[in-house]
Amino acid sequence: MSIRIAERWFERRRIDPAITLLWEPHVDPLIRCNIWHLRGRDFDLMIDTGLGIASLAEAARDLLDKPVRAVATHTHYDHIGGHHEFDACLVHPLEAEALRHAERSNFASLYKADIPEGIVASIEASGYPLPDVLVTAVPHAGYDLRGYGLRGARGAVATIDEGDRIDLGDRSFAVLHLPGHSPGSIGLWDEANGLLFSGDAVYDGPLLADLPGTDKAAYAATLKRLRDLPVEVVHAGHDPSFGRDRLHAIVREYLDLWEAS
Image 1: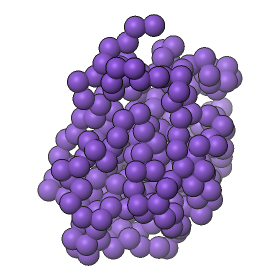
Image 2: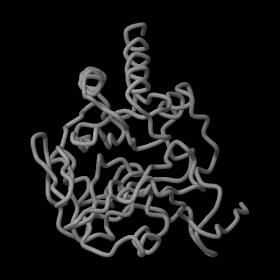
Image 3: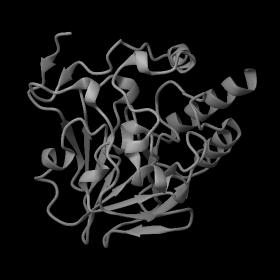
């Protein structure tokens, strides 16, 4: 199979002086994770790290002028591929071992054929048609798509849970445990500014509620909880950011879908 070589692997957009969005444009939307760099006075956060196909730390080198803590909103492979590049990682206790030993993941592939047929059917029925290969380019000549895999976190892994706070010195985030998409899904809530970094607890795209490890009852409770937050902007794990009205519409759509099923 012939596949082109990307001129660069990551794209980025500055949201404001403290927030930069990075993403992997050559990756299929199903596994194209939003990677959020948050600049703080005392240290920075990297919220999720993408697939790990190319070096995130190298691509973001100009942004990383102080210590960085890499947050995993959950440990699906499209969100933790670059965590091994950072010296300090934060994750929910239920998924800490999955981050420490990501190389043992039972699924991390760039090929549709490697996804179980039942999961493919569910994903495509939700509105994500899958190509045979989940990338449209490689980062450099000789890159082995078949050799792709995760690496376990090499730095310190600390756990964060509901009620904890992450204080960057000039802004603070409450940790929210948001189970449903995965058991240890978390969000970061900046109540002072009405900003929610939601991971995959809610995003503006087709709902995937039948993946291994998902829990519809917990998911519904999480969505109702998020609906009641005084959110101004949601920066999610996939797809574009959105505001309060769209959050309410997404929650209503998902809950109506489940109640009708």
